[in-house]
Length: 443
Image (cartoon, rainbow, N blue to C red):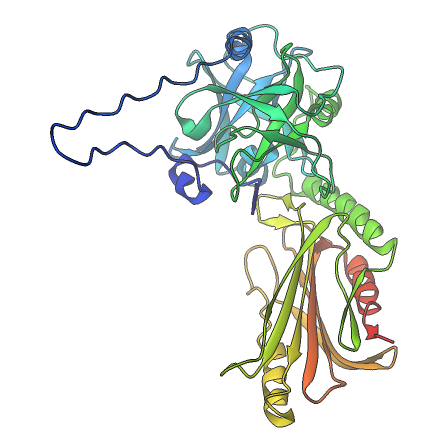
């Protein structure tokens, strides 16, 4: 899975599947000679030089509980040379953005200096934030933007404070743009760990090319960066004399509405691709922005019901501070109940629709309101349920679930579900119609 936009809390680092160092244990007799450990890999001269030149403008960004002064989360950030503003990830400061009555934000430099920060601008689509120091003294200067993008294979250098244990520089390789990202990101073959979110990534000349944002928790050295041009734009748009009004629900909602509009428009631009199963054609998400995985469980032995499954999910989801949103997922199951017979198959098949779960009422979402009906889709009889839940803090956004089951075969069936998170009501209904058009007979 991808670890996008969760606040970096070192106390919870075990959840992130971090690489550990295995201590050597001597086995055998007391006379056995211990193995001589290999010398540690030297830090390249380039990495050492870059860190020495830049560490004064490297910061830890700390979210602190106001009434207790305890640290709630921590990430990294950096000072921009042009105007002395500070860049980090939105997910690092999201608690402040949404609950300013509970939290405040501080910086700490590599020399131990500290000061207060004020939030100027946020960008949820690229997980960025811009702040300015309101107390303390930051050194003059800062990081400068690169004027060109790196090429695949170029060495890059990521900086930050991993796990709140000290500032570090990580050398790695740029490996292009992940093809399924709805917004451009950079693939970095290097170790980005919790606490480094929001830190700078520079080329061999020390110029900013990206911002640390995420890692893939299912792989080794698979990390992701926000291209520096998006941070440069946000810094240019920030008004030093006009802090962002907090809480930032209104600005976050505006950006989420823009995102869902673009996402839905891209989805509706062409018919959903179809997979043929028996005499059905079933829709799935286009692999432009999503990936699909499948598996099958055949009816044999004591297992009388054969099931084939597929799940399609987008690589992109926007972190809000109240959960991820702005994404689509689709799954379907093909049932073969030939060995069950029609009566037993009907009971199990009917129960599968009842087993579809919707999130309970929460601080973020209202109770789901559903409408169910029997419809004819191009001559294919189907049972369809459409459910919507409203976001409490992001007015005008809804989570939609559309569940459809074919009713044309006494011992076989197909059930599918599309979930659209963080869309307008009109766009949710438009997605439902678009999705249902993807079911038809395979002729």
